[in-house]
Image (cartoon, rainbow, N blue to C red):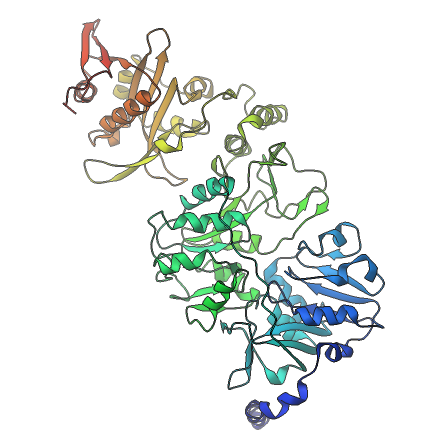
Length: 639
């Protein structure tokens, strides 16, 4: 047995050395090469920018073919086999629906198979889907006879290795990419020389909408994170804005990437130095971009391509710490169900690698699965956040898998949240004109409190510019931002951590409970004449609330009554002073002339905060409390 294995290995090595002798015999024209395909067979076509264009054209022109099944994922080039005139000769089965076959699928002239991208190779290798012929594009062979799959390894490797016959365009413009992405000339049956330009899908400048979404996503990314980026404007916008976010030591583990990574690599932002696996390497399975991108990956030791059964394996993905998965969605319902592959019952794209990376990132230490979408569609006519998915719409990412949902209005963290919390979080990032409708629908279905307040349509949009990190006296870092309608549980938790003394100082009486009805009015802020700022322990979804400042303007005097509260275990660190400073800044920006406040005489710490704020204060003592009156018209210089 051992001798037989040794003999087989020797034969392979001898064959590899003699590949040049057989090369000429394998060279054919595209027309003659596809003559081997017979009626009733299944043909696999290479993916994305690696579509073998000459072979596809020759296949479509071949006479005598009938009942031929074509299988592939997204391809960038032509798809004449999906045209109505070829209905008797070909039938396409899409594992991911691209624009070139979308009409055929919608009209029933082609099929769609929903499947995770990581699991397609097993269909071929286990022969549940038998591939008779694989049409692929590869780079010219190296001195050892190995050709690279170039811009697309993804499912091409498994398709070629499982096929009975392999026909390859040897394209001298195809980059030679490194990694687990090679096929030997001896494993190719027909070679078709080609020098066609590789298909391109260049990255454009992000528009205003995708830019806003991209900035929200970029805010969720930390130093040392590893990124997965899907296809489209939003992932491109994330890359565009990461250039200016001051992040460092980012890595890439993804199914695909585009031109946007190059500037980040040139700036040293992406260097893969802190990746948990494949340190120093970009790991991917295909690229779609410009010729500049294809030249960048050519023979570049930084870049490794692997098949999707590896790159998209959730267990492999999860080994990357701080794994950030960024994918798109078509619509999301108020319970967190995500549709990404259909418009109602009209199949539009595919499952792709979304669930692979959502689950992998969810299990990564510090990982964040992010799903992004614009808040509206059809020029703002319909909401993409909906009470329930459209009839016939498919759930790609389940409500149990979803973590972050991002629109141009912010991010909502849903994992481990109740249906009520999810509904409120999603309504908060919906387009403002649809929020009253969504809240009414949520109430009618008993998803939220029956008396849940809502913000008026004319409310100022959430002021992101107010958000900031604060450094305290002990050098610890905390995070300040405006109050959100979804902060009810944070406010409640903070209240129950307060001492009786702190409660008395804030409310001038003893309050032992803070139920939902009492919290409602505090949450009703318009970010202009009524503002609440909060301080959190950090920016994460697990942060606790440790400070709160509130002003409410009196339109008759244009002076706002201000009140402050800091959790006992965080007092004495300068939070109160920074809250007052920030609240004054916001009030002055909103045209408010000054603050009034009522502070108990024995609340010495709060009195010191007010008197050291840098603005003149008039005070009077009455019934054990000081009435303070602060004017913003002049500063004392005492801050």
